[in-house]
Image (cartoon, rainbow, N blue to C red; front, side):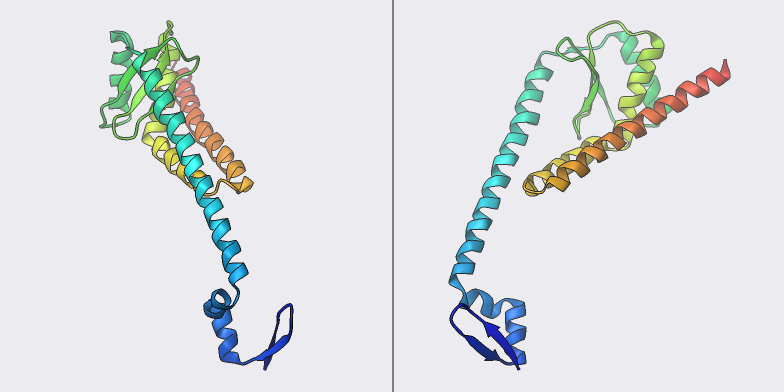
Length: 193
């Protein structure tokens, strides 16, 4: 025999009743205050999820669309480097290469129609090769898809600071992996010379 203590009395309960409590069958029906509190917490969590999803949509959707509308197509030289590297890394996707005066560092965006956006300035052949190799490594590793999924997970776990710390580290490791591939290519080129 087990005993269930409430704020008014101690009540003996059987093993079957204890199983019902563990499964939640008695818990929700007998404790309306707890049920009310859980419903309020669920509502608060859902409000947080909706707010974070909305902010994520605004940040990635609206701002990215505005930035991409101000981009211009890259020149023939940059496109030739892009095509050479796409062939070299056996990437069969069509990748659009754009230039923008609004940014200071290159980035890759788009899951179904990937776009590489580079700053609108002159790069040497070596710089262009390293930049495009870095961004194409993101494409090959499907980092944009992973980061999009991670952002949705972060929206559902908006209250958990560990998720923010973990995702920041994961994003850093994605960048390190791409940088490592660029360094390997630079080392190969130096060894050949």
